[in-house]
Length: 466
Image (cartoon, rainbow, N blue to C red; front, side):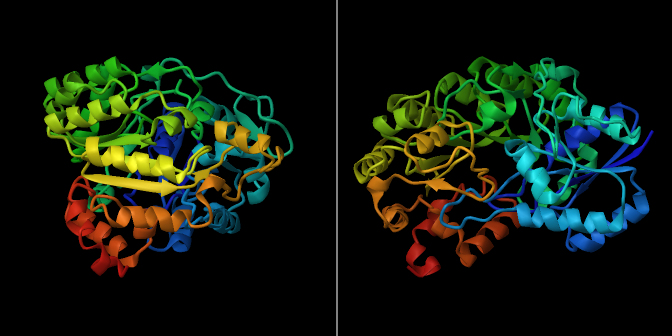
């Protein structure tokens, strides 16, 4: 048995802090493999350097792994790479110990070889890590070469793909007791629950099919409820289903909601929702099981852009989903991603007018510019248009924004938002005043934090100084 330290490096807290459930799943897998694994979450750390040094000194790990959640902010108006911050953490650890260092996580899996080189690390875990990480740890501790392990990336080699894990119920549960959930809840966050892996949708910008595969793999409702009940016993009652779209497939979500309602666990939950298949029956079941907020991933609200963005739903389905949530008395937000291939000011105005008439959301969050990742539809479009080189690592954020919008695209979206009380753009979120509002809402436990956005949206000229 070895001491294994897994460090979750994400420190972003807006729009709300995300508990490191991926890292906690790896800790659970390592402990099941008879190691003594510990999670160090840097999210709540006040002093990163002293926290790292003290933990390493007290725990004496035989191997350390870094879990990297995000590459960057994904906001075109304020692009920020998180790689320099991760490098600082790696350098501090390297100064404090000489044990083997590895890395994994969703962000790492997007550009594994490039990140290994940038951080001067030798080995990493690509994709699902529960099995790969255990194999890699055991090889490194025995001082054997792990290059032939499927799912392992070597700094000077290639990545051998690993078959996706089919039976998710058989996996160890996340080591949630090692996550400071009370702190996350106090900040307005949640305990995260994953109900499935894989995505067979074709959204043009999305990396989920690349990270998790296109084959849908579902946890049983019983397994999901048991995990929620276990976390509930530790005192946390606020949850977020972290699937890319909780209700895809619909029948799976309905089974979980019905089982959750029957379990009567006295919890609240939120999730990202796909408009397709969201009808009155599902919305009622969501409400009965504790849903207090749904976030609709629309991306567009005009037929040409729904097609361009590869969405699997229509305008009529968006309107139907909105009505179902309203009838069930579930607050909801809608997310828009303007600027994709073919976007014009006409399609943007059409989207705004459709939302005004048919989608009466508590909050609408439009952003502009698409963060381009490898192996996505937008990436292929950029290659075809000569906007990107096929060898580009894309470690530094690169955004596509339709040239038809011209140089004033950001200002135009801000102006559109100005006249709509429930709309908030990235320009708003970068304002110090709104950051303070969001922090206070979290501290006062308003859930969802965007539920009453209209209340301060009407005072935008005063609050934001426009």
